[in-house]
Length: 112
Image (cartoon, rainbow, N blue to C red; front, side, top):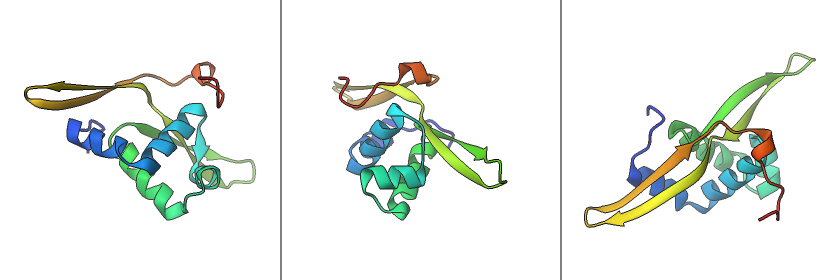
């Protein structure tokens, strides 16, 4: 996939409870899969399956961090801040507005 999901794919992804939970957690701050699993009480296989799909559709990106001891880990980040769903006579249309995520844009839990 080229990072652009169809409306049907976006609606399917956003209809998935675990995917939505991952997106909310990642919008707050970038995290590793392990951190996401612990925070959301999800198994690692579930987290990785959802992250793979979110990355394929361009909703989440990942970077690899190398620690001082030479080990590395992958950190994931949410790449959008707005989803628009509209309905016309042709059907539903879903789109996301991709933006560079900046740590200053992140909100603390309960800040809404």
